[in-house]
Length: 92
Image (cartoon, rainbow, N blue to C red; front, side, top):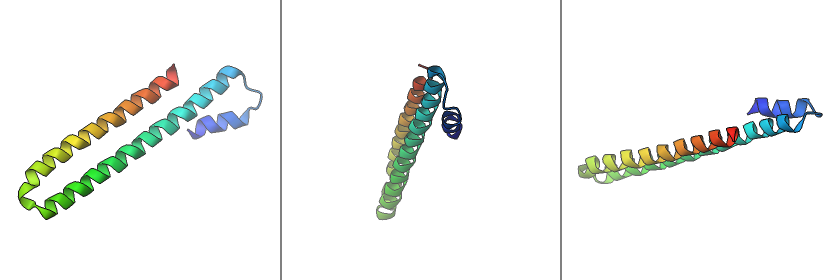
């Protein structure tokens, strides 16, 4: 991402194709960064909720752990989808 910004500011007289590539790199970097931050926050909330739920009802630990693993996998799938979208955004 920094490379794209530096290339953008170094050459003021760049052609339109170079500017498009630099800005697409910048957009892809920002997009995947936000996607990873969102996934991290979501998995953190799942871990927090699962830990509190197990602490309150230890007998339901297996059910809570199973649900937490499934929810974490769904969030990771959404983050992977965001990665694919940013890669497609870069190349098309």
